[in-house]
Structure formats: structure tokens, C-alpha cells
Amino acid sequence: MFFSRFGLMDGSNMVANCMLLFHDYCLVLMATILTYVIFMFFICYKSRGFSVTTLQGSNFLEMVWTIIPMFFLLSLGLPSFMMMYYLEGESKGDLTYKVIGHQWYWSYENNDFIDYSFDSYMLPLEEMNVGDNRLLEVDNGLTLPYGSLNRMVITSTDVLHAWALPSMCLKVDAVPGRLNTLSLFSLSPGTFYGQCSEICGINHSFMPIKVEFIGWNDFLKSLFN
Ligand SMILES: [Cu+2]
Image (tube, rainbow, N blue to C red):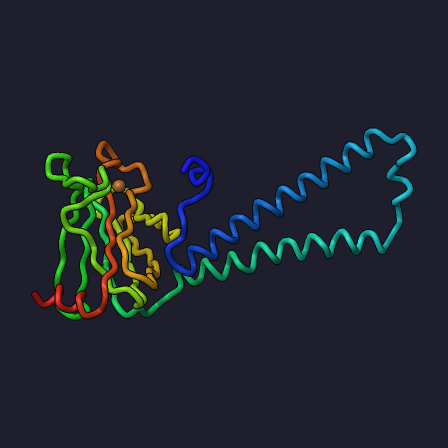
């Protein structure tokens, strides 16, 4: 329990796990480069016989220290762009939800099958049941089918908010007058929590996000009931 708090939350879908792997890779790469630079610095500093003049005019060496960092940069840039475009570049999803931030609650709109919208307020302490998560439960959570690509369109009506689901490595700003998109995908059923992640006023800490993934059959039943 203690050591698990050093890292980020476990990823709950494919792209979240890719991002966590990429994060670890970046840290390892940076630590390796830093160690190497410090090590070389001490070698140069300590040894009197070693001088940079012996390295001047070496075409081979110049090629090596240009090409090797280029591969390091490519190994950082390519996966980063791939994940970024995967997360926000999707123009067509199975379902499209509009997420609107308000001071201080979220509301959701959808009209893929029927037109409906609802507000999602935090559940106060008095209304909670044993086992509920304090500051994370809501009265109306968002319910989505798992195994389908959900396109989230995020905006705000008053000030900046941010819609975030840490276990899916998602976080996007809700900006008044602007639509930001996200792809939300889960391979398994489950409940995921998040919180508003942009300081938006006095009740900033009290506008949680709850997303529940259920099967398509249950989802359609819940829509038409
Ligand atoms: Cu907010």
C-alpha cells in the first residue's frame, strides 16, 4: 500500500497503460543520461591528463553524438504523438457525450438514441452509504457501455474546469466557448472516478466525476426505461 503510492494510479485501459509505460521509460532515459553526464563531469574534473583538446576535429565523434541523441528524441517524440492523437483525434465515436462544467457540478448531454441530459452533483456526507467514496460519489453518474468508443465533447458555461479520469490518463480543460474532444474507451466493466482538475472557485473540490461502464444490453435498457 505504501509503495504503490509512489507511482501513478494503475491504468484501466490500453492507452492508459501505454502512457504509464512511456512515463517510466522517460524517467529511466533521463536518469541514465543524467548519471552519464555527472559521471563524465567527474572524470574530466578529476583527471589532469584528460583534455578536450584531444577530442577536437573528430568527424566520427561528432556524428556519433549527433545521431545517438536524435534516436533518443525520436523514441520520446513518436510514442508521445501517437498517444496524443489517439486520445483527442477521434472524429467519430459510437456514442457522443457533451460534458459541460458548471460552478460547481457537471452536466451531461447525449442524443444518439434519445435526447437526454442530466446534472451530476456530489453526494453529501449524510446521503452516503457505507463503503462509498467520500468526495467522489455523485447523485447521477455517467453510465457508458464498455467496449465501445465514446467521444466526449467537453466545454464549460462559466469558468475554466477540467474533466479528468486519472485511471484512464485523461484530463482535458473545459473552456467556455470552446469544445475539446476526448476518446473514452474501456475494455471492461467498472466504475471510475475523477475530480475537477482546474481551480474553478470555492467548491472546486466538490464536483467529482463518476463514470460507470456496463454492458451494451444493460446500457440500452437503462436508456429506454
Ligand atoms: Cu471545476
